[in-house]
Length: 241
Image (cartoon, rainbow, N blue to C red; front, side, top):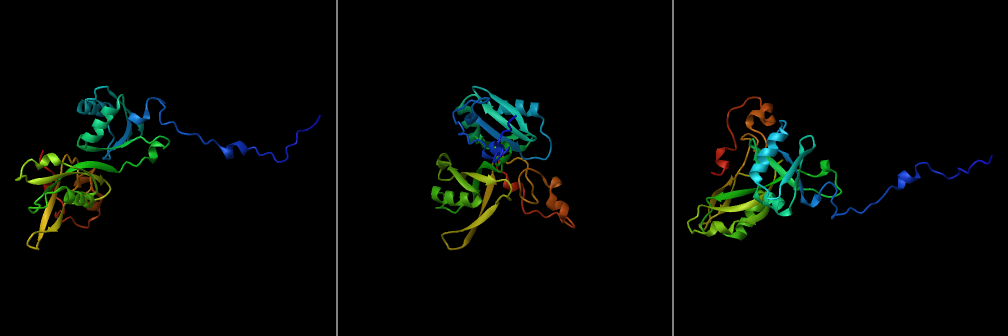
């Protein structure tokens, strides 16, 4: 019986080559991924999925519906039946459940869920105590980029000359402390302190300035030899509803 010639044969040849597929952006594998968001809540506790699903659907009121599933532990997939419903959610945030802020990103086709970064939220920020003459969009853009990344300037807030604050939408890294103020030069050449107030803030720590927990669960506070009660942040950072 003749034996096959095995010289040069690699049993792993096919595995080493692998497949290089083109990801189909138009596909509908388990629904259209273009209309899906991935998200997590800024909290340490376990989220009750059923309660959260009911609450978010009630807040969003999507005309064509939304399906919410836990894709991985603590990571949720929000699948919308229509892109307009998805865009309304993205543009209407931030959203909270039990005072825990929801971080949302679009699903990226071809990227594993656990590799999609969930570290940014978009917030409306009020700029208070700006000197007269600085209530202009070009200055708002610069201030937004100091706080985080500029997204939008609220032109509708320009309706009155006597308005109390500028309003800008900013993309913020939740891993960094929130900026609470800065200084700008006034017409007289002196410095004026301007304050930032954040709308719909959710759980926030006055010790470390980071979203997602309160000072009772702050590792910075636990690392203190002695807590003297002094706080760099205060409730003043929250904008009034």
